[in-house]
Image (cartoon, rainbow, N blue to C red; front, top):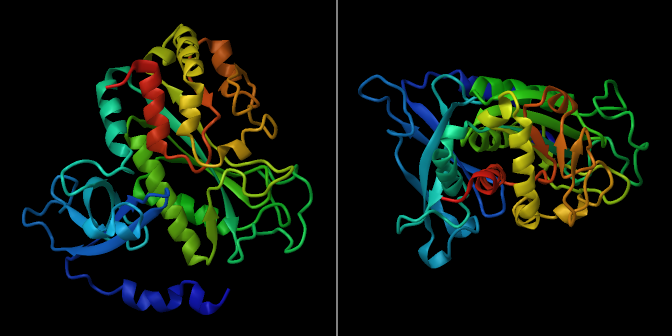
Length: 360
């Protein structure tokens, strides 16, 4: 890592403390064809009514979709429609992150705009008050694409001491995790925790509980913020579900879900009914639960087999886990352990609602 590859906050402070003269800097963020976040910056004059910019007043923008795999070169304009606004933890002041949906020139949602259908499902079934909590696992890599703390040739000591580990030799790059946590809190993302994971250099953060479409919004912005924080440290973030073959845990996006009916007394009946519906569409869920997930869902390393649907109480080797306290209480939530770490949260939460409550 050279000095030119990493941020220089000592130099940047000369510029970040300059008076913006009322101008708002808006970072428009979207999801590309490969499930990465992209962004570009624009400046906005203060609103004449003195209010802050929001999704109803922010301008629609566009970008070159042929450079992101979202449009052909001969008709490359893709439009950015603001859908959620967050305080910007990098620029601070009144500056904002603007999460956007991607739309085509003819007024149809872009092929890779999974938010649009998810939002329709959430609105149609809003009376069930769906709550989601997603657990995002990821791996930190050096510039040679090697997990941090791993020998250049060979492997670290076997798994065991790394999960929720403390101390040198057990965890790496905690600064990134702490910075990400605080940046998410500043931005208003409903981040609820972090921990070191089973494989060395693997971490997890949790977002939720969030209601409806806000789950996908918050998780995508949390992913964007993580990538930006890691950029400052000259570190890469991998969401690959099985980065290193062998006797190492993969990375998932464990999805916790409940509705009003499940949370009420006697809710176990609603949970069991939902699980039966999930079983009937197992492979349809697998199809949208992330790329390379077959490398992770092997029936080992705390996963179920990809071609078999199972569920059980406190069973981390099942497709669906019912927490022990939920079984004892008779109501609460369940955890879908099938989604891969690179799954799109809009697709995950959307198909859960569709399977359990019907398409729209």
